[in-house]
Amino acid sequence: MNKPEKIVSPDLSEPLIYPAEAFTSRAYAEAEGDRLWAKVWQQAGRVEELPDVGSFITYNIMKDSILIVRAEAGDGPDAIKAYHNVCPHRGRRLVGDNTGGGPVVVAQAKGAHSACGHADKFGCNYHAWTFNHDGKATYIPDREDWGGALTEENTSLTPVKVGTWGGWLWINMDPDCGPLEEFLKPINTVIDPFQFDRMRYRFRFWGIFDCNWKVALEAFLEPYHVQGTHPQLLKYGDFYSFSKSFGLHGQTGFDSKAHREEGTAVDTSVHRAAGDGDPRTTIAQMQMEYWETIGASTSETLVKTAQDLPTDLPEGTPAAEVHKHWLNKAIAVDAARGVQWPELTDAQIAAAGLALSIFPNVNFIPGPTFALAYRVRPYGNDPDKCIFEAVALDRFPEGEEPKTEWTYVEQDLDKWPYVIAQDISNMVEVQRGYHSRGFRGNLPNPWQERKVTNLHYNLAKYMGTGGPRRLD
Ligand code: FES
Ligand SMILES: [Fe+2]
Image 1 (cartoon, rainbow, N blue to C red):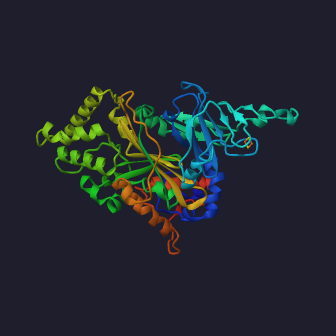
Image 2 (tube, rainbow, N blue to C red):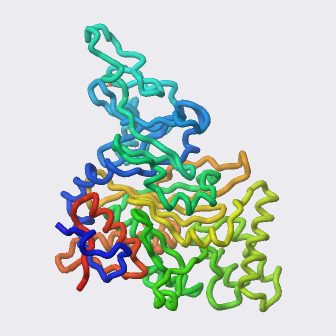
Image 3 (cartoon, rainbow, N blue to C red):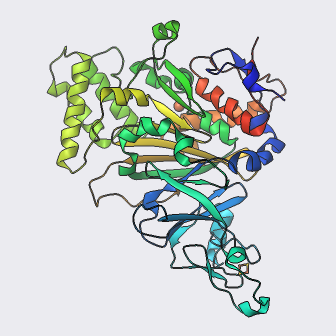
């Protein structure tokens, strides 16, 4: 077993190697349930999915299912509760896709994403034990047959820690876990100025892919792959990026080789001006291409206002001015339709960088009025499959938020936005490659792929195996 903390410097700056075990081993995949997923805070949904008292969703991770319910209005400490989604009587899953039988059983067989709805109380379909939003049994048929042995303690739903941050719901199955806020640091403080809680789903896609969850997640953790995977984007810049750890979590941001030689990551903006050409047209083109081929990572307002740049401004306008004009116009256009931008300083935008990852399985690209987020989970305990999700958030005028639901998208490159499909095209091939007896181990780029190395460095602390070691 590696002892990664002894052989790897804290900033992960040396050339390192780590094995494919974490991606291919069934024993490793099974151990993840106890060692990783039962211990960490996990992003389990959005607060907007629980609008009313009684609104609920389920979140499934490997063999566990968590029921999250709004017990009170508002955002007080007891407003949202979470429980293990299992009936304390004889173990039936309490809320799920097969509740009620009939056609929904078919939906479950096809791989329904999760359950959601509204319930004044949760009644178990097996013997009709019934629970309130506080998880207490309010009805037990023939309770007297137990002769008084049934207590609140042995009949209540088993609680799960739950918290909110950035409009997201978070759960932790470890009753002794530390606070969510501590777990998220310092990502939360970097992102708080963006007011993610004011954003709402614009789309939410999910699929079941033939690769390990880490393969799918890592496809989005570094822009080092742009030259190989998205060559059409190179006309907008070289995508050279720094990558660094924030403790458990990670960050990438646009960089230059000059800074790399100085050994310092630069502060960068997600809205850096594109390429070397006339910035009026390159920004307009890049925004349109992002919109058409990703469908996210920007906003409709930003795309539209970018199209006006060549007519709004004279030729030769410096890039910084073009950029400023564009953002100011987008802010004004959004204000006119009732969408308020957060007041972000250049330093705050720079501090967020390009993309942030939250250990172990979330990565997102933040923007002032939008975010593109990926969440990936194991599919049961199969090391060769995962549940992949891509979610776009936006700000909307009050009352105009779209109604969205989890939309299943096949593992078919024609069905996903073009750029995401390019990323997906690597996933199955990487999974195959990891099974090759000729693969010697991963050789992550020490500057541009540290976010990936950091994931394995921290995974090894939970799993007790698989950590990076020095290449030499
Ligand atoms: S298993 Fe739920 S009431 Fe019996
Ligand atoms: Fe990509």
